[in-house]
Image 1: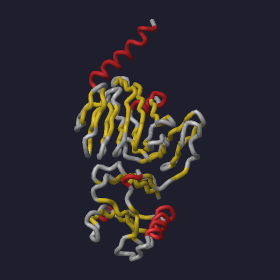
Image 2: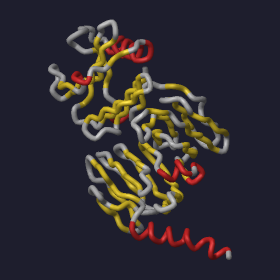
Image 3: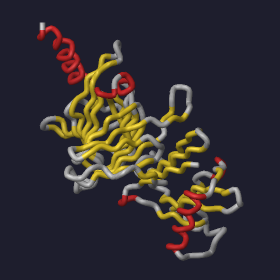
Image 4: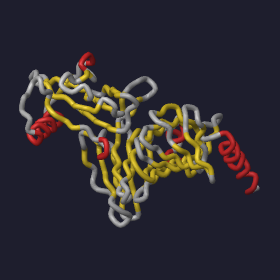
Length: 304
């Protein structure tokens, strides 16, 4: 009888390993997959299988799993598919992913929405219990990991915020507010208390933030960054779509993401035109995500 109970799972494991857990749906540059003793360069529609280790190089990769779980990897990231089984008829299965390096963005699929206990996301220093939501996880070479909760979009296009529980052998922290962050230094220290942060971006590709040169001739970078942070956290702003991602007339290699405050002051994000940048914007329950190129390498979160 015990063997009979395990037969369906064994069949799912066999089918998943033969046909794949998901596939690459978008990439800015090929990544490489370590599959047993073989290295495979990815392209769009390249299958992703259980036990694969996906490593991005100088580009980003988006993976869609069979249950609609979505994972986006930034540059120089490593992800291992430890386990993936899914029954599309019953909408049940198990998924276990391990982030080894870099930044990944996770969006829950049907498995997590059916039973969060069937989803396991880990880093070298912590694990995540997912409760039907989006989050990012950034793993440094030392293993130190930063988790940030993001707003999600339901089937009707409405924004909502779920929650994640970040834990290790020393403690657990629950994030349940959009853009909350916790950091885990190592396995011997508990996750840090939740703290809201305006944005999270990898250090190797972090753009400079400064006032629009047409509105402010002050070239003092320290003062400019301070003013920008104050405007993002203390001042309500409205984004005009027509002003998004304009070429910087003072530097053709840069792109301006403009924000206009209610007082008429203009500040902007001055971004490398070749970077893959995502700007997440949450205002009165309405969530919008703006992508420059393929997005996800650099992430800005703006909440009002």
